[in-house]
Length: 252
Image (cartoon, rainbow, N blue to C red; front, side):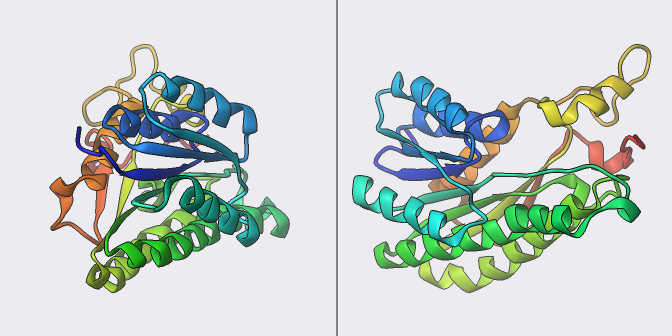
């Protein structure tokens, strides 16, 4: 088991990619904190993980609020004694034309998708430094590199996540903390329904011609969380099935 004895926090772990990462980590022996603003989703994920024979804590957390992030870290340390792995995966998306974006919606997306990642990373890193090692994995998106109409705030926030990954990846490596990011392409989640509809029927998906599964991202997250990635830091790994090569995104 590649993560036996480790403690992992997965934000946005109540569904989709975050849920699969939490389950995959548990299968490899990690104790897991499932943090999500959706209490029901967090508890459902926790219920599945309990069957893996590891310890699990579901937490209702809004990562845009520093006091709640602090509570998440304190709870993890209190219950498990340490924080070995942090996966920043929580997300808030609002799709609308750039000229119609309200300031409130723009700020909400930035607060969750960028500021929240900063808060979680900083507080977790402080604990990791105490134990002399750690792993931080940020879930970004290929939309940060390929323009997707209507996702301006989300794309800008995730581009910021990529820049942050590179910068703190260099800064924190001296503490034996590896920071990397995963940039998923088309993954079969509710957020990808529009893409799947566009390429249904006779139309062919770009790249490999198939939509990826949340498990595809979870496998890469496991690699970055394990000792196998010891010489990788400040990097962004694309999980898009060749999608970025063709650069096709839906217009609507």
